[in-house]
Amino acid sequence: MTVDIVRSDSAIEARYAAESPRRLGLLGYWACFRGIVWREVLRFLHQRERFFSALVRPLVWLFIFAAGFRQVLGVSIIPPYETYVLYEVYVVPGLVGMILLFNAMQSSLSMVYDRETGAMRTLLVSPFPRSFLLLSKLLGGVAVAAIQAYVFLGIFYFWEADISYPAHLALLAVPALLFTLLIFNAATEAFSETFIGRAITAAALTQIVILAGVIYYWQLPAPSMNYFTVLPALLLAGLMLGSLALFISSVIKQLENFAGVMNFVIFPMFFASSALYPLWRIRESSPLLYQICLINPFTYAVELIRFALYGQIGARLEDGSLDLTNLYVVTAYTVLFLAAAVYAYNPSKGLIARRGGPGGSA
Image 1 (cartoon, rainbow, N blue to C red):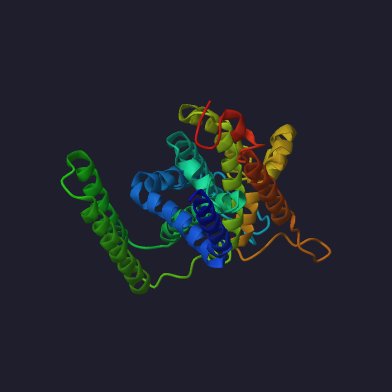
Image 2: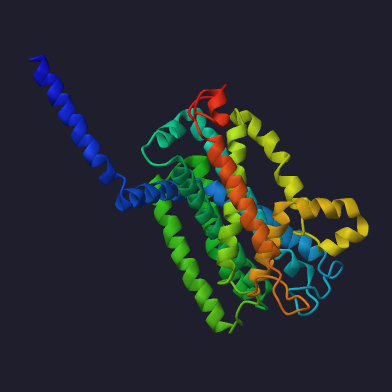
């Protein structure tokens, strides 16, 4: 009787061993990747405050700070610009980089939260390679950041376009009504989650129709920047910043420590870069700060986005070749940060192992 039970268990183990490679085939990897990315998208859709907060910061800089210094801080002719540009045009790549940076740190916050709640343990104990799981989660966050960046670029297109006051009212009517509805529901909880979701979908479709109508009726020109060639730069810069945030999430022990650590990462990276002012101006005022900006990886991400917005990879050198420094540096930092994050989340070697595994904290 015992022999039969042992043979039966052995047969079951052999059968599962034979089926395991099939479960980890291409379809299995695709199902895992799609599930992780879709989870990030759903989290983004259910956390509407995250979407609005990601846009409030760059829009404040664009509408208030940049507009106030429009004439004072004009930028001279430097690549990729072929003429003098207003300051609000110059800061657009930096503000897009701000969206990617803050979204990456929000993803880092979600990683810390998942680790404290135990959701991270469920993810990392799956049979798929740990590097694939982390990369899938990273790509999900980058996709969300790219959507936010394109929404900001769309707002900037209508901001720089010369349209009349009625057009502004038409563009702001639906967002104002939707914002009022969300505020009212947050205070009273009068509507269900399903109704709010349908209202957001209907508002988005209506806004798209209004945008198309405004463009057609007022005969607006094409955007001054290339919104198609910037996509690869957004993805690569998002991967670099997301990988850095992924590594930082392995260092943060508790959720309460997140805000303090982020203040030492976000603001120095953003202000010590070319996001708000050209590097040649920084070199004239402070050679030390200029050297710090050259070390800062965010500088190269912003410049990569800046050139991509004008359909370029880099500046044209005197010998006719292209300066690919931004592309090389961002790629190198991406590989470095991603490798560090994968190592940090290794349960036997990385930083996670020192606090009791991916689901626990010290």
